[in-house]
Image 1: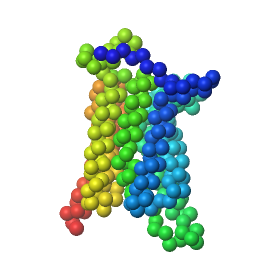
Image 2: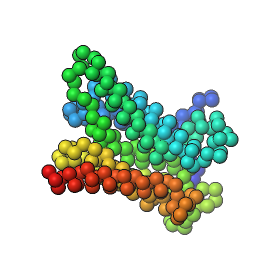
Image 3: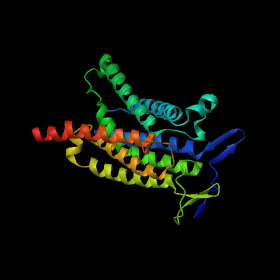
Image 4: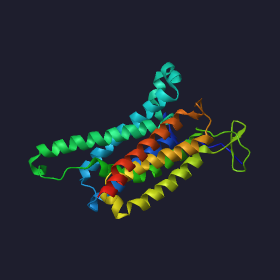
Length: 269
């Protein structure tokens, strides 16, 4: 049993606070830069250093705006509509994974479309190979579970997203009630998923089928979230929460696309 007494603030300088939650996001984007640069050097990504920095800028906007809007609209709309200034205070926590994922997908699509269009107009880059949306999506999907897990650890430090009350020996006491450490369960599940995707990406067949790893992440990421959310107290709709319904949708989309465009096409090849 562990009694929660962590300080979510890493450093405080006057009115300026550096929180672990914010630090988790900063660290995630830094890791993403290094990973993208690594695969660009290996010629597995058709991106220049400038392209990568541009993409990370789009990704930051997509994840933060999408994640925050998803949380505000799906989880606590009444609270945020009565306290509108709180919407901007993301360092207090409150980012929806599904909203962040949608934001990241939109940001990636917009970056690819805009960059390819710009390269076509640039005489020096006119004959450059077009940037592939799914190639970028595959690489990002491979590391996303690790970054998502980092966010869950930040949730734990922030003292949010409690699990159901429990008497297991590893339960965590929040406000005099011992609960399942849902955030840690989630981080462990996502870390295992990330390791599996890294192993899968090393297969030549996976590398040749652009988008397959991305949709595998969509299906398995949704499944992991769906299962672990049974430890998380929430408002239920027909037996499961909004997050679980959206995770089920991820599973369905991922499986349908993989079967239709990869498995069946493989049989036809």
